[in-house]
Length: 211
Image (tube, rainbow, N blue to C red; front, top):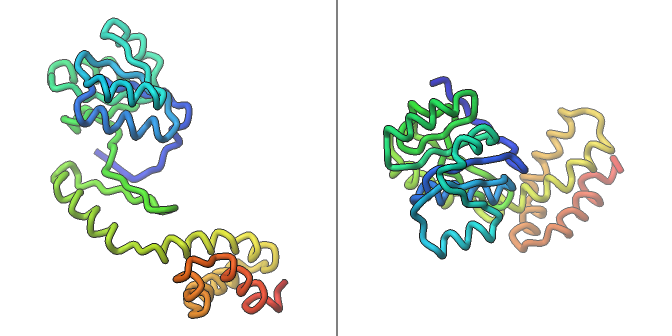
């Protein structure tokens, strides 16, 4: 497979989940949270989980709707415990985006382990070799990213337009971004969760000759 990492706009896309075991439920939640229209075919799901997913916007169907929903969907997640059925569904879904949780050979799209910290989204994939290590690496990365890192991102978002409005040179804007990141006074404001004062300081001190 020639895989590469992408972020895909899922809002209002039609996602079909076939099978609602632990993987199917996790991916249902994920696509619902991303704004997708999620249809689920399953014959065995706990009532509380069904209610949760319906409240998020999922619609449940029986097996008789499978071919119709396959035709209409943009992406199908195959998560049954029946290998023969998984292969049959993958064949019928030719030309669609297909993710099969148990058999990568039936997939043309991977749904990696993903987590979000503020504005930072991190996805991990181990070529299907070790989901366990993906979880361990996730914990390590989460422990490295600090609240200050997230606030620095928010601050730089605030000042990007200010720099664009007042500095024509992209390389010069980059230099200012580095100065902002390394400035001890700004970082002290950030440690106190005071982005407004940090932004004011940037305007009045660092950019006083530019604005």
